[in-house]
Amino acid sequence: MRVCVIGGGLAGCEAAYKIAQNGFRVDLYEMRPLKQTPAHTTGNLCELVCSNSLGSISIKTAAGLLKKEMSLLGSLTMSAARFSKVPAGRALAVDRNIFSQTITRIIEAHPNITIVRQEVKKIPIGYDIVIIASGPLTSADLENEIIKITGRKNLYFYDAIAPHVLASSVDFSKGFWANRYESGKDYFNCVLSKDEYKEFYNALVNAECVEYKDFEKPHFFEGCMPVEELAKRGFETLRFGPMKPVGLLKDNKRPYAVVQLRKENQSGTILSLVGFQTKLTYKEQLRVFRLIPALKNAEFAKLGSMHKNTYLQSQHLLTKYLNLKDMPDIFFAGQITGVEGYIASAASGMFVGINVSRLLEKKDLLELPKDTMLGGLINYITQPKDYLQPMGPNFGLIENSKPKLDKAKQALKSLFDFCKNNGLF
Image (cartoon, rainbow, N blue to C red; front, side, top):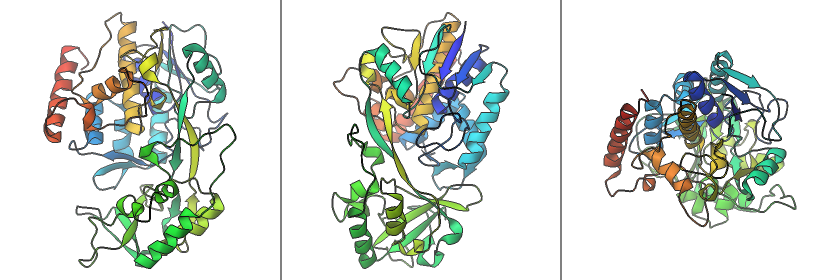
């Protein structure tokens, strides 16, 4: 039987790898570098575009629990992340170039995977199973094809990319290295006084943004709000958000406001502005962000940008296995299903890969326990509701009243027993 995976991002690579590891042939279609998206710059598989952080590693957090579940299920993403990680306190951050290059080499070398570098405009014929993992930056032609086969128009929200600066251009005398709430010095905290914050705030809220095209309607996802949109909610909003000084002390004093910089590569030569996704014009970014004292003379390795993200109303279209209700030989995986974030996207691809493998083996498809993070996430995007907004991992997806740590321990036990009982390891 022939399997086609459309999209070489985290979800597509996880699905293709899982199916190939189970002994089945996969054609993996990726249009880059022949045709780029508005956010990508290379032809590498699994290129990370928004942040180099995959979130917390602690099982006391939802993101950390999901990572543990993925590791238990044999995730390619987690293996590559461990190999390419950079210091980030409680977070798992990676050198994004090493990360994408590692996965690209693994996929290219796999004897059961053929990478096809071309844009998919129509569902390819001749395949028994098709997995669409084209991501939130699905091309216009493929998006129209998806609309055609689903009968429902895709909705969208806007995602944003934070700027990156060269570490050599940062004035490190205007701040201090420290992690919030814990020991360690993985983040540089650019300090602003009240007057400096006021000047920065006024410039930010009055700065020029990139205009929307006529057919575009602003619809921001709350978890990735542009910093200028967040600031417009009130003068103090940023001080309770990305510029909060809580948990950060210098000489036993708390700054009025901070901007945190995090390493983007293992060498630490590039730093990203944490939580500073933006739709400001490039010219305005240079002007406004250089009002941060430590960044007065900053050289930017990459400026922030915005792009349109498409996703399905999966609760109407997909089964609990993430295949179409009306066309069960077509599966969807990744952010196009309504899961949000790197890890959730990769995890959903792995879940689809497991079930497609079972389908090829003529075995019953599996529904993960709902008291696991991944099981709760899949349940959320496929259960009936009027409107689906993208959802990342959170403990609210696990429907019991236990404390978070007890939920996490129960989730890992449930997943371990589930895997053992179903021959997943």
